[in-house]
Amino acid sequence: MSATGWIRDVLHGPTPGPVPGTVTGTWPRTSHALPLIGMLLIVSLDLLTNSQVTVEPALTAVPALAAVVSRRAWYPLLTGALAEACAFGMAWYNEVLGQSVHTATVAAIIIIAGIGHLSVNLRLRQELALAEAQLVAEIARRVLLRPIPGRVGPVRAAVRYAAAAAHASIGGDLYEVVNTRHGVRAVMGDVRGKGLAAVETAAAVLGAFREAAHQEPALEKVAGWLAVSLDRALHENDHPGVEEEFVTLVLVGVRPDGVLEIANCGHPPPVLLRGEDAPRLLAADETVPPLGVLDPEDVCPPLQLVPVEPGDRILLYTDGVIEARDHGGAFYPLTDRLPLLADDGPGDVLQRLHDDVVRHVGHKLGDDAAMLLLQFDPVVLPAQAAPRDEAAVPGRLEG
Image (cartoon, rainbow, N blue to C red; front, side, top):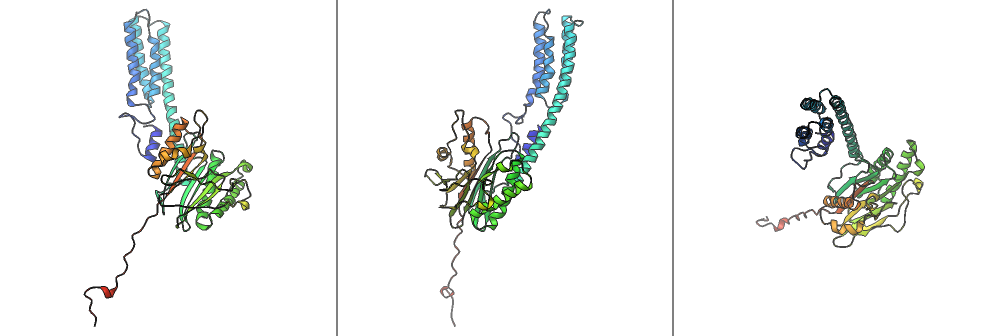
């Protein structure tokens, strides 16, 4: 099993390959026979052709092929030894043992087998380093972007996140859902830029949200808390490019009385999905810039209030979804595609939506893409039976 396969098994369980005996991301075990088959074909071709023409130099490809298909460092050496035996046999048969072509072939097989041995060892070390980096990235993602439970109070929730950075599982997008005494509150944000600096900024914003969401009754003032924390984090850590750093985010609250609160700071507006109705963009009348543009004390976005009904869904997303372009340069038509995809549980809807975006683009997404789907689904508790009137209890005697 490759190192990448090991990390996948540790974090998500084994992923069966398309053919029994294979491991996803590596060559199937049957491919180990390719160097031997190639060697057999070369020997057969030499026997069937004119003895004046030798194909002995083709044996140099055998250890090279072994280094490609195998993850065993000894395999190129083994196939190289077999190729040397075949080379001496073919040279004896063709009576060219003393000729330069045979000497050059023997030397080339030795050199290529040694290079193949070293290359396999180097590849294994690189895979191990990549696996360790993926493990660290996955641990960091779980600490920063904690798993969202399937139900948070009266809300069913699901999230789908894909990082654009190669071999990484975390980027500049952020999300969180918490259950507070003020109702269920969620945040979806997008940090300008990528890399470690974006992750640090996202961590500062998420840490502030997890505290402010519980402490601040007014949702629009939570944005002010986040702006203060962002400003402090950027300046205290001597963050590069402080003057150009900003975070777009949208705060959403689902109150116990069935009212949806929205405070948007320069982020794409949420989408409301209600039954058979067309998707509705919940855009604010007043545009507010992202966090980091205004002074923290000036951050107070207007609060939108939208009544919600049981079964209503609110989709939060980052610009990596709506700015995904196809080969012709057309953006992904989110509101046009949602009616065709939103007909199942929140997790299944987001999975189909992600797959549809990837099909639209035609390749891996070039930007971080996060989606959070909240479904208002309050649990109705059975009414408690009214206490019986003792005077109405049959068989009760007085006096």
